[in-house]
Length: 547
Image (cartoon, rainbow, N blue to C red; front, side):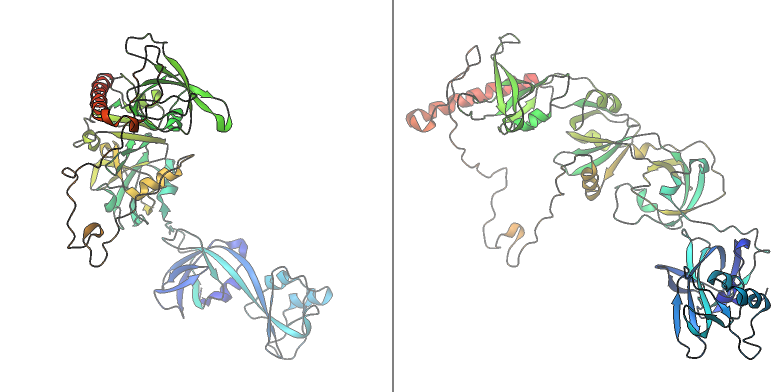
């Protein structure tokens, strides 16, 4: 077949013969030209192949044969056309058209179905009395090699094409896939693949294998990982992690800490006692709410009431020698401040799955036995670890072709990339994925995940330090101003006077707080008494907690 303009070929194409394969021959779009089609950049080079999958009529341009003026008709135009008698061989309509058109008229689609490359002059009373030439514009849906999406090309694109369908039957039009698409193609795995475009956007893992996911890198994809994950953070260190359920380290529970009665009420779990020790003095509110003192032992038992008047029912134990149920009942308002730490004597070591079965998240733990399968377990050096939530995000097991025995687990929905599957075989067994048992997260991605948790009230990420202003040194100080002493040598700011409180009786009753300003002559004696009490309390708490 000789080359035709793209417009002539599409106008004379029988849709029943689709799909058809075309080769780009020449045109105003020079070899390698990049242009925009339907909002997407596309490149056509001489010799490129197109696989035409569908053709849709977009509009028809009507040209007045006398004035040259044009109007556009939609594909839904209902008017009828008849052949226009005119002198000259060019304007003599074809016999089929002549016979059907003179009798009853032809619809727009009937006229276009009898297209013979050269437009025929027609009459349409719904448009006007003069003869018209019809120029249809089609949208061509085609597949190109190494393009993910179907390309939509207007038939008016000024290129020449030739039909090579018969000689190109063996050609496979390779379609790139996203890794997230491969996730749903388990029947195609394991498979080898070549990366066409690496992950877009900011990094999510601090791992050494992530930067290697670049264009041209060859991968082996083995299938879905069956592991689930736990989002975790190390308090006070700014480090964040994603733990796999395959992690083999051992944990020990840490006592939970609560700031205020509201947090204490939120720590209640059905069917489990919550015993705490007061770590911060809290003033009472008259006779209804007695004061809480450092070292008091409370057992939170549940909420009472509804609405603004809701209170937390607690049992306050008296001295160490009292019976379990002796003491007093307290109804604490939820807006009451104070500090509390959970009283626990559990020194058992738990695996990750066992820990989550008995402990609701979030919770604080400490790794007491690092994962023996890891060369360096980053969690083993941390004094505390906060487990935030369990995540069931799907992961794929992969490996680099040059290191098939060392695998990794990649989350396609978080770390997507474009790749091309190949026919090369993947030899078993599946690689070891030890290094994916603990993945350290970037700070930005950690807060993004935290904000997506159900019912999350995650705080925003910490702000970066403010830049020093001109004429000032670090921290905004003037260069000539003396630097403050370091924290270890800086004198502590004076504390406000502590109100002296009566020692609790054996029944747990307390006297009203004493006004510290009414006995200034005995202040020194009071401070010595408070200091002795604090030392005794600290010694007592050290015997309670295993940490």
